[in-house]
Every structure is written in structure tokens, then in C-alpha cells.
Length: 349
Image 1 (cartoon, rainbow, N blue to C red):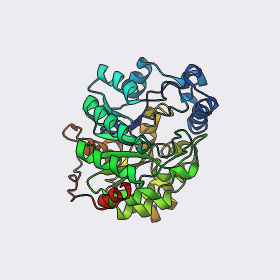
Image 2: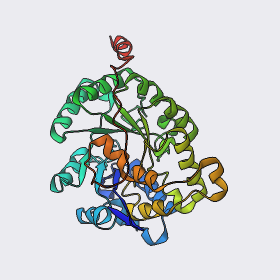
Image 3: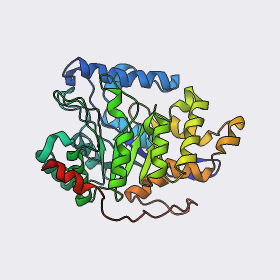
Image 4: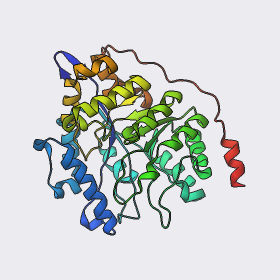
């Protein structure tokens, strides 16, 4: 919980990791390049007083995470978003199992999400069932640009992806987080294109598609899709740190999101450990859209900030929120059966 000027904010960090990017776990030069690219984001967008050296950035201890998120970072609940990258890292970069081991020690603080890759076929469907049963999954994190052998990515609209989305519905996994936006070495930028979200959001109205990084640098594409698809949400990871180095750019981002999506479909995330939540929460609560931009974008109210910082994610994940927060949020929308799944099933036969 964060408090400022008598106002309270319930904080849900919707995108965190427990990774191992150390040289001992790097399988090849791609693994080294991947963690170094993350580190460049960290160095270039963080205030000087919260920058780490590369060794600390490569791996954090359990004590580091608890301190950074909950003791200093104001976070009430944090959601693990796994990123396997088994072609680049010996034991995987940040797996559900790694996250889950930490979450089991602190069951009141973390939510564990799983992951899947349609290129794994039937075996992957069975693995998803096991993950869901083991960790009671409410969400998954997908990485459409991940390399697997000769393949350098896949699309949400691929026929086998439909099979996995149907399995999510069957297992009660409603929240589908997708990395869409900034590329990371050595992954291909176009494999993170947001366009395929449009197809599956229409076909699976019972699922929530949280587009991480709000599609940057394709913000306009994301907004046009999200405004017509009510089950598409925007995750602020990577976008929010521009509040420090490029505040007017961030004002444009948040202004466009509020114009197209409204304040019920934007979620706070630190992307820990690229950034720590403390300075991001403090900066966002203090932030206001510059006066000369308010005619186009309006202003950020305290209630809007409360929704973005925690209440919207709490609604999607069924997280209990303390009474007295002073904001009423809408109930989850009911929807009919998936449209289009039969079409893709036919393609597989």
C-alpha cells in the first residue's frame, strides 16, 4: 500500500520476473546479448540513484525481491510472468517453476502465471494442464518472438495457438499476457507485432488479452485494436519508465491510452527486475499531464491512478482489495462462446 497526501493506493505489480541471466546460465551469445539488452533498458531509463551494476542485474536473491517489491516498493501483490527462452539459457531464463518455488514461500504476496508455445503441439497441451493443476493458473505469459530451433516466432492466430487458447478456457485461465512491442536482442521486431491480437480477441471474448508494453512502438496500432475489442488491456511495463527520461512522451502514451481504452483497461507493471516499483509508483502518483497537453488529453485524477496502480489488475485476478479505496470498478463482462475456433480446427485436419 502506498500513501501520499492522505490518499491510499492498493498496488498490484502486474509484471515481474525471478530470472537467472548469469554467465553460468547463458547457453550462447544470444543469452548474453539478451540480458545485456535488458540492462541497457535499465541503465538508460532509470534515475541514477536506483541503477544497479550488471552483476546484480543478472540475478537477484530472494531477499532482494522481497525488499525491492514489498518492503520498499509498496507492492501489495505481484504477478510472475515467466519467460522461458530455453534456446538461450541452460535452465531457462525465468520459468514458472522458478517463480513458483519462491511464491510457495510467500503465498500471500505472489501470483504465478504459466506459459505455452503452440510449436510444442500435443505435448505442450498436456504440459499446460500440468502447470495449471500444479500452480492453479489464472494467467499465462506468451512470447511470440521466442526462438525454437529454426523457428523465430509464431502468431496468436496460428491454428495451434487456437488449440491452446481453447485449452486456457477449459482450464479457467482467463488472463493472457502477451509481450507485444519493443524488441529485445536477438529477437525479431516484427514477431512482436500487435496485429494478431485483433484476431484472437474477437474469437475468444471470454479471455482477457493484456498487451504488455502497450505495443510500443506501435502504440497507434494497439489503440485502434483495443478500442474495438473490449477484452484487450494495456500493460504499462516499459512504457511507464519514460516518466523519468521523457515525461512528455509518457504523457502522450497515457493520454492516448485513456482516450482510446478508458481507465478500466490500463494496468501498472514495473517489469522487475528491469526496474524497481518504488520510484515508478512515486513518480506516477506525483505525475500530471503537462498543462499545454491537457486540452487534448485531460488530467489524471486520483481515482484513475488508483485503478491503474492496482484495482484493474485486482479485478482481473480476483484479488481482494481493502475496503475504503473509494473507487467503484465494473464487473467482468460476460461473453458467449468463442467464434472462429471451429474454422481453425478444420485447418488442423
